[in-house]
Length: 320
Image (cartoon, rainbow, N blue to C red; front, side, top):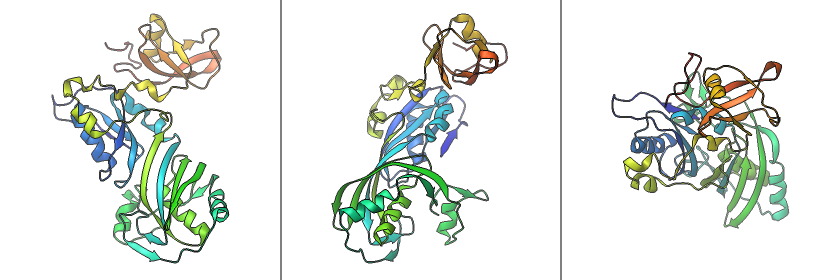
């Protein structure tokens, strides 16, 4: 889920562009974590890409300024999690913060039986979202209905489980690592694994390891961020450039005239030798990231989305 915050008291906020890969601590909602960092940066515009439950920890991409335009892209990317599944007890929320709703026996199973249960869940399939989720029904989040004891039918949604492996086992617990598509609920996955073993389950712990394309990127803690003096925060190493959200796209280097045309929303002639791609990262002569460009009609290139202030179709170039 993406949340953006634009309204602020005059003179308090400032323009800050970039992405923070926050290591969200346990106990905070994603919005609370976003607001902590936003206030420290005094960023006038902010959003987060991919909600983490309060119980969960790990990578939460926070987007500021022009980077909020990339939130939707990051939401659609793959994510990796590490989780501990508690077998034999189901809760109303699907995690350790909920109330037990069922306690059942855990049948004896071996490694082969466990692998069969996991194998049935890998690949492309459908998953029914939980009632305790931010999905909405008639404008109301499902979790509000769930807290009132109301359960409504949810439509199964397509997901992809690219990888699902066991990393450890304890007394009625299983440690797993999963790489999955957007829309995957690991809380539901835990109960699906248990169902394959003939029992029920809930999550004891959940940590998001990465969000694509930041598989190898370092995360910053709230303590690290808030320890950075506010005057230095906009240039801190943990505030990544906007274009880090698009590392795999080919680069399109523009001259001054092409930069002006692009920022006016006009088409460009396709340069000779440009590799074939669905999108390109466009940069001005100074190496500043301008936005995304895509192939258009008659061999031309057209704006897909601009990431610079003051750009548009009003006949002006980017402000400096």
